[in-house]
Length: 422
Image (cartoon, rainbow, N blue to C red; front, side, top):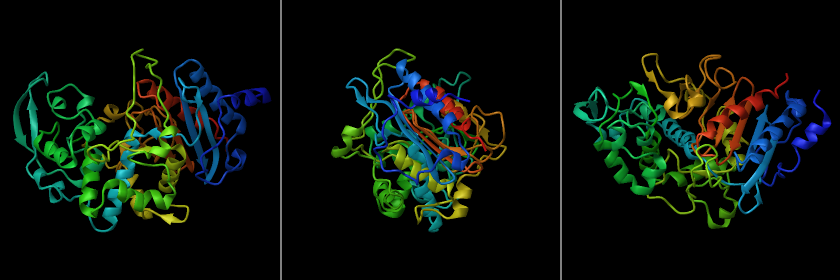
């Protein structure tokens, strides 16, 4: 048995009060098959990382069987200013934007629009005649361009099989032609300019042949805008965020909320190089569906529980049950080359659904979980997952944008699962 002193110490100085509105009804861990004593190990482990200057602070929310059993803040929102972390702190969620854009696209699908096999060129005609690069043996030069075997489809956008890859995820001649990532693209060009560049740049892979991380959800977000007649933030506000009570989720954080922005450590704990993070307090040139949102742990827990509950939460239906089942099923056929390791090493060997990674087998992968669990993290250091078999949803918010984030994804994953006792 763990001693009571361990529990008290673990929950002490760096565990903040729950200032944010609870995203779900509170429950006792023991009532839903979790151990309070074992949950106390989380604070001990996270606080040790903060004390070693590996992490400025974090917020963790855990829900099981519809009950919120853990919602705690650790460390500092702004360590240099000695401002403690609170559960309502705001974080850049980076690629955790992608599942939101995917839900918007799937709502279009439910209306008979933006269907899976539909070519993207139906929405953006410039995509009608895409080309694929042929490179030399060292992949340093493009020696030819050949016509794509088929058009990029809407499904390709969701599952990262479009061939439009992130430039910052490789060193080939094709990578050098693409923007580094979603946020960088949104700052440097308008939505129309972005679509024009994507259509004019040769693909790294034939459409549908390879999972490789890229701009699919950005294009999908712009397709939602064109199809719905609403800007992506306005569409999501009306159809997802407001119904779910996600009051602190934004593409541009309002001035009266900017004081709640969490800051990363000024020095990367592993490389010892200066690091900074863009604050989403002013608009970009377009609202990127691939990585431009800010949110809180409480807000994202509402979103995660909606998906865990097959499309409904708090009396609001966002997606149909079968649509969520379709979204969270593996969409990579055996003949699709799987390079998920390029997107996130901790999701290597996962399958991929529509905007989310999906576990397809026990073992092999680096994370504890169940067949069918689904997720997608953010390069800012944020992470979430849902495990339908265990009726479990977890949201981790931290600004740790360097490679140390891989450590925390595995550490928090293990700490949460070890607390299950039924």
